[in-house]
Length: 366
Image (cartoon, rainbow, N blue to C red):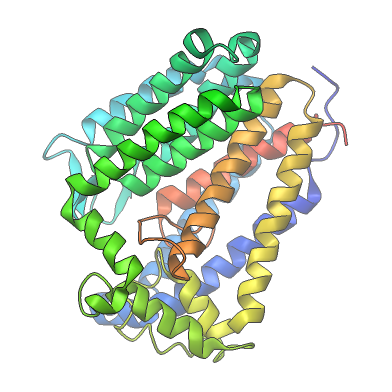
């Protein structure tokens, strides 16, 4: 282990805080009308997001000062706990059902989503496994199969909820980590074809997923049903133009775009702040990705490198899918936009992950 630097990556901290600040402003702007109608309190969602942001920032700075090798020591325990939570969430009376998915454990408005924390648990464990078995990762039987078996076990449990979006992000993150570790491209091609067949099977097995595909291809085929969300999202983005309608001036948040403070918050941001505002957010995410890659390349050991790759891949994949869905480039799936979308589990997880990344940056050589 190299000597720790006195300060973490300052650019990463500033970028994270800028995204968090924009997120808090947009959660209030996007949710005020809906919150006033449903809870008679325009600040209902904003106050909760601010609470989780505060807790997350405290946790981020706390974790920033914990040696990242600690997570290597506790990786197995953390993974087992997350598997237990994935089992508990499926039990009626324990798991809470929202929007057709049994994905939450909690009381009332405050709850956690175990599948979100499984993503970071899998990153911790896979980083440990890959750093200890990098020489065998080129072997399909000895390296690739054991690592992917655990990933797909977790994916299968997440799909029982069901939560295809979170499961896809987790699998995508792990595949990137395994690829970076040196797995053969030929193995990925074969597994990719098998995975594609399985993905198609999952879509065909649930009518609502098939509806999302058809609505993606032609949302106007069912404009008041499966195509409603994407149509309303595009109606928000289009009028935004170059500079937007102005902060707080969205029209689509007036009960056109369902719960705009969650997965489709980028549509409201583009409507109010325009192409300039949307581009600024994308640039901030690009800076976050750049700093994460630099930290991964400069990490003093394989475990730190894989950990940084996993964290930044998770964030990048979520951003890519969310913005792709909102702009009509991908079928609708329930993926939050990191740091911006309303949601305690997602926001807390992202800030915790950044805290780990910041600690690695204190050892990185760059």
